Image (tube, rainbow, N blue to C red; front, top):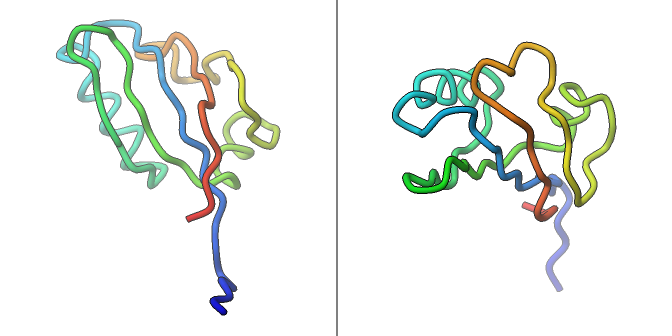
Length: 92
């Protein structure tokens, strides 16, 4: 039997970028590095980035626990993000 004592819940988000990735990349990378998120994938045709974030940080940014669904862009991110959608919640 395996017991996971220190498992963490992570929200998997799809971020709708304001501009194509080549114009949003610098701010997106700074955003993910500042908050310690993991950038999972970035679309070059569709302006969508997929990231993984700890649920505590999600709550700090959006003010609520993550649930599957769409969220408006938080204050200070409107220069590169239109909004975000939580597509999964995983136990890592």
